[in-house]
Image 1 (cartoon, rainbow, N blue to C red):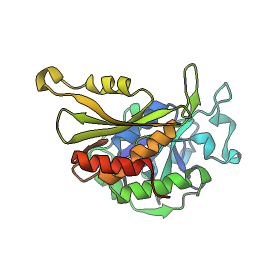
Image 2 (image 1 turned 30 degrees about the vertical axis):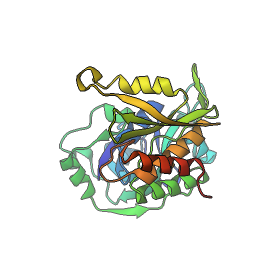
Image 3 (image 1 turned 90 degrees about the vertical axis):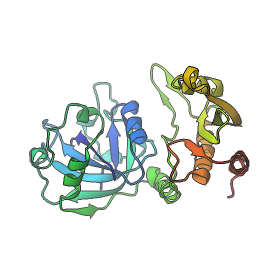
Image 4 (image 1 turned 120 degrees about the vertical axis):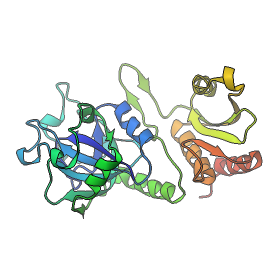
Length: 285
């Protein structure tokens, strides 16, 4: 089990059942770095926004849900305070991951009593991975499980997470629509793709709106001038929305993933891939 840490204003799974972030990129970084079953420890900030008894202390920890959600879709508006919004009336932490389980430390210890070194500023904006010694120290703190509110917006994600965990599959952030100076619309058509590395029985499964652009991006990190091999597209299936393409991607990964697979890469024969691919296009209901 990996344990990550991040500073927060508090810890209350009964009213705030999420791990929230200011930026989507910081949230997605935790999805990429974490594995099913990993946990995140909540540390009270040393600012006025945190209750004085909680400042600088390890307050509790949560099992990380690894399917992206929006904060506004989960929280009860009654729990929000004026300090939760910026000067433009927007939530300070609009991006989130659900808590799947949560534990409260009975006597929250100071960071300096548990961790060998004080956390850097990075832990204020994003989750940082603790080393094995600090992980063991955190897991040794007496704690009790605390109920997490069953928010409707994360109920399906929790069930999907449990199914993926049972099959040893991994998942990236679920596509969601957003708008800023530039925008993203998860309702636009997208493709599920399978890339093959050279002539090897090694495949990369994913989804993208532009498969050729995605292929070029993946190969940008491959020293093909040395290896003489690179990724090439072998299968693609168009879907009316990015969410549908993502869901097929997850069905393929769940069916093909083994303990030797890494991330979105799986190893199997081409015939097996094609059989799973066909079944994933028309999943059983």
